[in-house]
Image 1 (tube, rainbow, N blue to C red):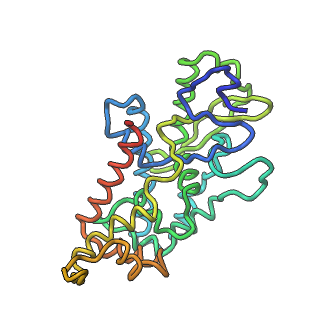
Image 2: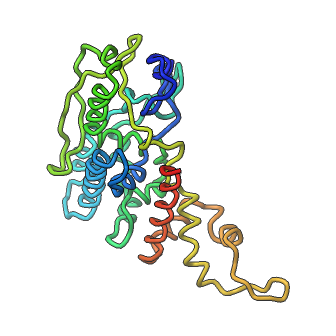
Image 3: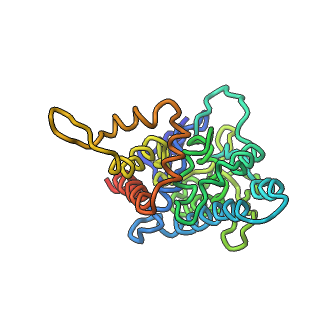
Length: 295
């Protein structure tokens, strides 16, 4: 049952989740980043706090990789130590009756401690928020789950505000206090907060702003490839077409240099790209996110 039906409302200001199954939406850190840059947007203040925490977390990943520590594995395991699949948000791909094993802290730590990730970290490159599609098997849902954990205090603050803005929600607040962990941008470590989540028919849940979610992460492999091939295409010799010299098309370039081993070839594109190409990709992401949020 959807929350709007429980509240007997036609529209709600948050993701209208179904408490019986996950809603196929993901929290997108780049939506949050965009909102944090726009003071005129209603969710600006919370997004600014959330974005600082997300950035701080990914900066810690970079710091560990670039440090001279002899026990980086332990540091990565500690960094992901408080990760827990955010089931109360009811977002993602799980369906009714799905008892499959979710993402674990150890699994996430393994993703980010790989040398492949280290290669993506460079001062002139973009944050892993943008380049995460190049991490093998790190899909939209895993990024969403990780970001949800990092900003859980912001999600709690949003739910606390909802109790004020929508008093009818108060009758659905549970009597059981839950402890939640979030990543502190100031302390660079995990801290805890508590809240009485909402509950209906024995199911505990938290609500998330519509503006934070998307059906597909804005940074994805297809968009990344389409952006980063522009630079090498400009350096390719022109080909003769109908008696005229023309530059190679994106489709032809991808057929010649990308397809066959798409992920590895995309990594090479990213690693060899200039600072301008990274900036162009970031701008294209912003254009996409702006369209989604302001239409």
